Image 1: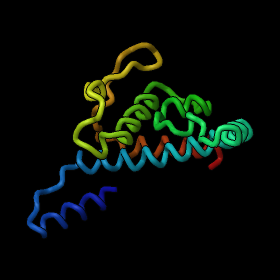
Image 2 (image 1 turned 30 degrees about the horizontal axis):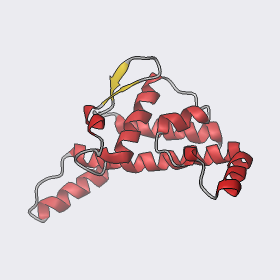
Image 3 (image 1 turned 120 degrees about the horizontal axis):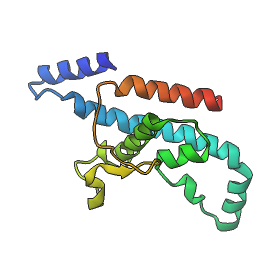
Length: 151
């Protein structure tokens, strides 16, 4: 990832453009990683609930609502991914990046701008920050998902 950032910065410098800020790249990286995590979690969800989802689709002609969500924490809970509070925070931050923060300067819903959410322990925490150790933490999260669900 560091080599990609360096290459993008060099490209921008040679094109006489402003340097990319690492948080601009990290926001996009979080969004793309969120899409990958969402696919992994939904694949496991379909594996666990295939017959139920098939019946629902056959009767309604629509995807089950759970397959339409981008809420990674909800998906992770539904597939019984073991996680601690740090992983919950990371999943909530990834969700925010996937829905809007990795794409747009502002959310559609005003309330999403606050950057705080209530966590499963009842405490309110921030989901609007970028951290220098996000990339290795994301790699560990993906490795954990792949290991737990053999994907």
